Image (tube, rainbow, N blue to C red):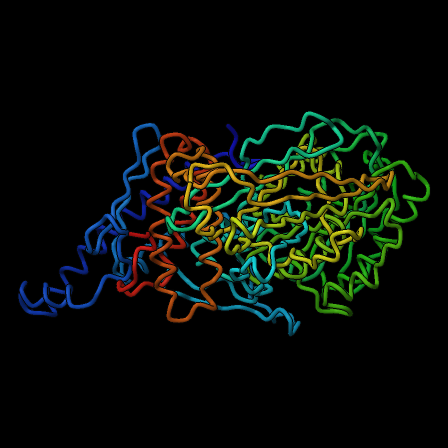
Amino acid sequence: MQGIRRREPGISQWVASVRARKRALAHIALGWLLVFGLAACGDGEEFAAATTAAPATYAPAVTAAPETTRVYTATTAAPARAETYVATSTVRRVESEAVEEEAIADVAMAEEAPAPTDAAAATTTIAYGGTSAPPSATTFRDYQQSRFVSTSQDRTSTFSLDTDRTSFQLALNWARAGYDVDPDSVRAEEWINAFDYGYEYPAHLDSFAIVTDLVRHPLDDRRHLARIGFQAPEFRDDRPLNVTLVLDASGSMKDGNRVAIAREAADSVRRGLTSRDRMAVVHFTQDVIDAYTVEHSRPDDRAVSNSIASLAPHGSTNVQAGLDLGVRLADQARRQRPDAHNYIILMSDGVANVDATDPFAILESAYDADSANPLRLITIGVGIDNYNDFLLEQLAQHGNGWYRYLSDTHQARSTFSRDNWLALSVPFADQTRAQVIWNDQVVESWRMIGYENRITSDESFVENRKEFAEIPVGAATTVFYELELTDRAWRDPARMVDLADIDLRWVTPLSGLSNRQSTTLRSSADTAFPSAEVMLQFGALVALSADRYSSLPHVGAAASEVGWELWALSDRLQPLAGQLGGLDSYNDFAFLLDQMIYAAPSDGSGSSGYSR
């Protein structure tokens, strides 16, 4: 079984070393805290009263007694995860400072710069008492979470598919660097789709395999979770590629190792191409740097490699100018080689501050009128502080491409190795969207987890639109729904019933042929969560953890309930270590869930999130 697609080796070892240091520091800090506490209080009885008067910051889950420590112990089949969390802010602060000092040498720590002024995507700075506040001058769009919808009011859910996973990689990079994960940075669908659920490929190369499941909700036994997976076929496409690199050479790229990451990624793309492919290069600061512009040439041309090697930070950031020229060069190559796939790859921290700074204004300037053989805009983000996620994510979504985040040069090489690059660069489906129509005789209400910026009108489902997702060959998209079933469904929970009709539409690249595929979500209502297939359990825990944590800016007094739910989801995750503990993917998510529990507020007065 695989873990995260394109896994980074060594993550589990990194996490283990950090946890070992954190355990030692926690014990030392607790010892000093006891000494100073005794000195301040005068005697042991007074100190004991002082320490127990206030509730623990993070209350244990339903099966644990209320106390100030929490111990995780994995099964013997998994790598050791024994770890004690001391619910004392002083200890967590000491741990955080040590971890940050350890990580700072390996992570791009950027200098603070003025935040973009896009009113629709304001800079977020939130601290919930965890390790430290999120990085400065980071820009995210706060997508309001969807609510439960009664099927008596609306039975239809329509959305664009999504295979991005950048939100998960951003969070992982932040947590490694000792930062709290910004709730606004968490897009649940990208966390869900960061993992490989092992779906079988379709029997035919011109269709998707659609997987459906229903399981009891791990936080509320009165509800259910439905999973729908769309798996594209795997095949080889020998069409040549036209690739246009648009490289950010602005001053903000000097921070940390951003230039080194972008340069390594760009050269990895070049090395992964063949003599049948063509590559062009554009550098931009406050304007295009003409001396480094290379029109489409063979990838082994010296002018191409020299231009990539010359990437260096200079002045301001005019993304519009870089993409305008990139689109012109790509369109020229497309007309010369109409049978090739066409990609524009923007590598940047997204901090646009000259000319158009809004993604839609930039795309309007760099408009591609050919929807039959589109230019696919891939955005690659680098950096921590002074980073505009919103710009890069929206450019890719509405530019018919995909978005990735690179944290270091190793990840740049692995993401754009020849095999990975070719897998990502061959489209199976353009303008891909799905529609789920719930059976109101069985489903009382429904709620989609994530996909807030992918939801579209029901009427648009029959229209071919450029902003609908491109799906590469072999890629899978997964979506989870929270469901409340009707009394009729509960009368005989073992009986198989039709819960929903699922319809999928897409366009075949180059040919422009429209396609449609349908299936039915059919299941019984009595599948207990621990009895479900292990990757279904894991995906559900990922989905709910990301969804609940991303709600923190908006839940107000209910924020402590989020903390309790994260604890409960962590309890559900631990039994999976026996089967998944050897995967980087499991350990990465377990590490992130630990950090989110630290960061989520809890006053010790909430419920566990489990039904009685």
